[in-house]
Image (cartoon, rainbow, N blue to C red; front, top):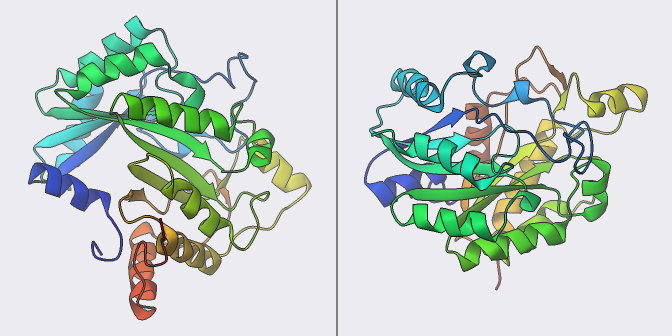
Length: 305
């Protein structure tokens, strides 16, 4: 599949000459749209039980979480290098000395070669970038800035608490300090329903100094405001085939330099309320490859600078 799109696993293998595995840890952070700084309740779709490491790891030290992650990973993958992924909530939302302590504990592990820091565009500043640039001289540092939608109206409705302009500003700040950046978007939000939305997203991202991207389908999860909205006033959800077609359009129009980290998500069945596709992640990627091969498409075939 590496010839069809710029795949993250292949990117890492080319960079390091071997498999590098991600380990997700809980850093103990919150978000400004949760603690009252910019809002309450967080993003309307967010239920952290749907992703991240098992909740029983919460309260363990970063080192213990890493060791647990390595032990679990070795059952499936044979890797000698690991990137620690701070995923849950906004992982730069703390004073710099607190961040330094947490990040440096992770990097002190002998098998860890880098960090992937998931956060929000409004939770970064110049001091943080200077510090990350110092780390980046010796480790593989990536800043993953959640965006979710390229429409300010949608960002307002999902209670993000930041704008598209904030995202662009954070990207440019990271670029000035030579920090690799990634972003995360959701397809299927009911306010982003124009037929050409995936193409618009691809064109938007292609113009920006971004290295990595993650896309996944909208999940309506229990214990979220989105679920309450869906129960009261159900909105149209993507079918599996619609989503598959959206990803084909997205990849076909995306700059080939951008590395794809993810294109599909799974949530625990116990909390997933909609859509129920009963499609495994591995099946989706096989279908995507087949569809693009049949149509003779690949990442960036329609991309123009």
